Amino acid sequence: MNEASVAPSPAPLLVVQGVTVQRGGVSVVRDVNLTVKEGEFLGIVGPNGGGKSSLIQAILGILKCHKGTVDVFGYPPMSKPVSGKVAWVSQAAANLPSNVRLTVRELVQLGLLKQRTWFRPFQRHTEEVDQAIAMVGLEHLAHRDVAHLSGGQRQRAVIARALATQADVLLLDEPLVGMDPPSRNSLLKLLDKFCHDHGKTIVMVSHDLAAIRQSAHRIVYLEGTVRFDGSPPDFPSLEALAKLRGIDDVHGGHHHDHGEEHCGHDHDQFVIPSNLKEAE
Image 1 (cartoon, one colour):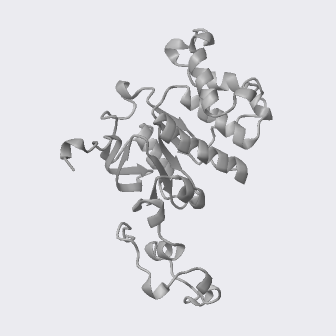
Image 2 (cartoon, rainbow, N blue to C red):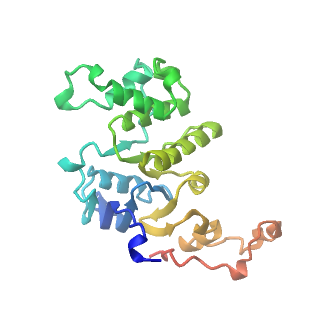
Image 3 (cartoon, one colour):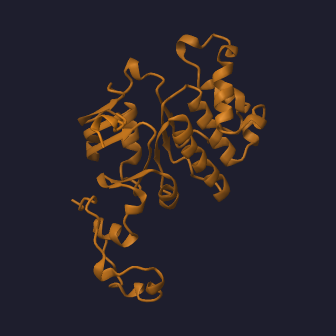
């Protein structure tokens, strides 16, 4: 094939190089290197205290890097050229106070408020708000009080608030928490659609490894540093993760004897994938 006919690979939208983040003088993220391309759905998994949220906050510029650099669209986080291109949906975004009375539409409109536009009428943003609500499939609930939505619907509403900014990159921190299985499946399909149909780039932190393996294009396992970075089919078994993390099998492997033939694993032949880093 002629080299000129090969389509160029999308340029990275996000580049994390040698990033170390400290909290209270302790390094919670160490020497992390990541590149994320346009239209990619990256899932970040790992144990509590593994640095997932700290990494997201470093990408946003909320936490300063002790070492290394973060570039978003070729610029540092929070710089003027990046403004409006990256949206963050935090863990607490959908946990609205019970005394707050907002419709879905009003909640989405709040995502468009900036200091310089605080006193401008909401009507100026009608198109952006309508489009965001339609993208998450909540048109029929646009005038419903968010307090009367299900957990899944409320999560869609806060994602619509982020989408209304016309952001190209969505950073989602534990959006699946508290969702029932149908709502979780529906949201994951929606996020996948954002990537394929709307060209959005998604970085999602989640404890739900099964959900990430079924939906993300790529998985990063983070425990202080990146231990695995690859496609879902290459993600290691729980036994490999235990070995990687230095967790001993207190039963000496005997608890695997029963029913192992049904799992299709051969422990004697198991090899930790080459893209897993040994625990330090």
